[in-house]
Amino acid sequence: MSTPGTPAGRLVLAATPIGDVEDASPRLRRLLEESDVVAAEDTRRLRALAARMGVTVGGRVVSYQEHNEAARARELLEVVAQGGTVVVVTDAGMPSVSDPGFRVVAAAVEAGLRVTAAPGPSAVLTALALSGLPTDRFCFEGFPPRKAGERSRALAALATERRTMVFFEAPHRLAETLAAMAEAFGDDRPAAVCRELTKTYEEVLRGPVAELAAWAADGEVRGEIAVVVAGVAGPAATSMADLVVEVLARADGGERLKDAVADVAVAGQVAKRDLYAAALAARSR
Image (cartoon, rainbow, N blue to C red; front, side, top):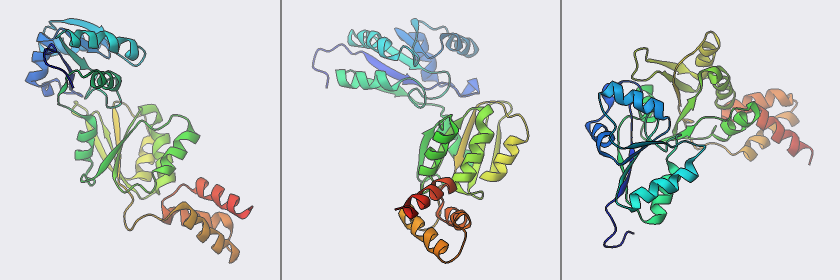
């Protein structure tokens, strides 16, 4: 905690529009005009945003992105410690949510400096609200791994997740990711692809994840994308060990191992390849 006599500096995480510039809050406008330092993920995009908002940035503008976070955080906190106001903004949405911001906040908290936020647009919450899927419990999973094997393992680990899941994805990887989701979660798992939220060509497609995968593979998808996937429905998911027992019992009864794995994987909402590997490992013991 700060001690008496500490200058009233502050670090402010300020949300920027995710598309429509009219979503910029009056508080964001005032902060850009009055703050001592504005730390931006991309300084050129910040200046372009300020121009569209009709705002003149009053303080010093510095770059704050993933490659200079550690070094820049120390510089920013020196300003706060001396009583200044530092505003952190990213290209779109709320800083620290899949964007720079976490490290400087953690350092400010450790140093006992004041941290606050100017809340506003969020692609995560906007996609969740528009998806038509349950919103009472959800989790944000960020960008899935780029490599196919790592992505499959990460999604398989989420196959039994009960909460609605929100992901970000790049357009050129969307089809592969949706196909991997169909493999991990089952073809019929409800999902939504939210594209270009709040922008002119906003589009929200809802349906079974396999159908969305086919749509993405059928043409060129562009824009900023969020994918929302329903959690597993029904009773608490069965453990992988229990699924392996069921697979081996069916195989011992004369069913082909691959056929047993295919059926049990869909029912248990796990990736077929992971269940097959686990079954082979158990059979070899």
